[in-house]
Length: 470
Image 1 (cartoon, rainbow, N blue to C red):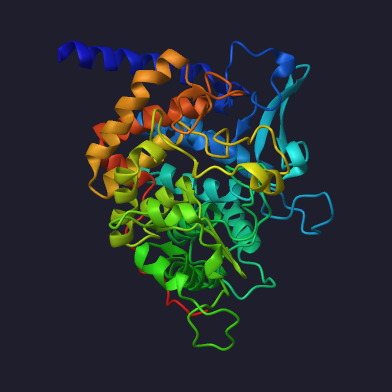
Image 2: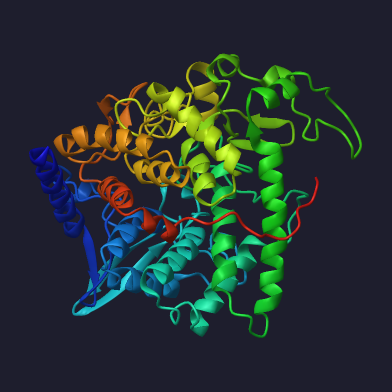
């Protein structure tokens, strides 16, 4: 037993060394971490893996905060705020006001260093990062909770930055739904995967960032007005997601018996979902005691795929109810081989293949069936899974998933993702020494050892404003 504990400690120390190697310095200060520090990749093959991605840095930041290394997180928050777009013209090919970059890189000109941000102008398919600004607010709250530093978020430039993000997210739009409309590939799934419109992941991050903003906003000249808008959207958003995105066998039975083309306010099939759209795999796959939030919902469209990050984050943020949270974890427990398999955790289930894959992904070879975002297994999701398991008092599930990851990640040198139905193969194009794979493992270990760290990222059942019926 002692030997196993010692070995685990040595492995964690090795992971820490890899994480520290990934740190980026700007003007002599730590400011973030590169996406990957792959010794097998040449400089010309680096693409943008040598940059710091805002979403990628979150697990690294949590690990640093848990270990009392808050300086790098503070520097990151300050410098990325300076990169926030302030262009109110909303001109073509320019990021809108409030948008945070997807990534940044330190450049130098002689002795002078400066940061260059990418808002999607250089990204594959030129996709803007919808989630960056949301993660920034969530991380700012985590920093405040970890350090007790109440002054940073209350500085005028931080309050202005939060309000710019809220202006961007709460803008008037052509929609009757409280959810946020986004293009395909604008978050963790950053390639064409049919996740445009109202994808679950963005709605959950939107909800969590609004919860964080409600804690960070000062009730100054216009702060009370912003807080009122935030609370109204929170209540409506929670009502909408819980009522219309939830799927279990009871709900599936209701959809199966829906009538189509109904008109009026008091109708059951509000989104005109056709019962024939229920996929054949789902009725056998969904266990009696399990359930989950659907991947997407819009006019005449329900995406029945299971998307892991959105469901796990819905537990962490208390967007899912306590009963729903337990049923989501039941689904993991009873479909363990499909969703955890040989490497926690599968990003979505099932994978698209055949004609559906060709049409939806545009024949994307990187997203071939059971690879990358199309059903690949991503070690970074381990920390989300661990946090959700702890929040639902299912610690044994977290420990089992961590044990699987620990057996393979060090031997495989922390790949970006794994391929195959059960995640048995290192991803065909996966980088090794992927920073968020390293940080995700360390964050999961820290959370199990110190469950109080869950408060950095989780939210209690909220007292949001009143909901509304669509």
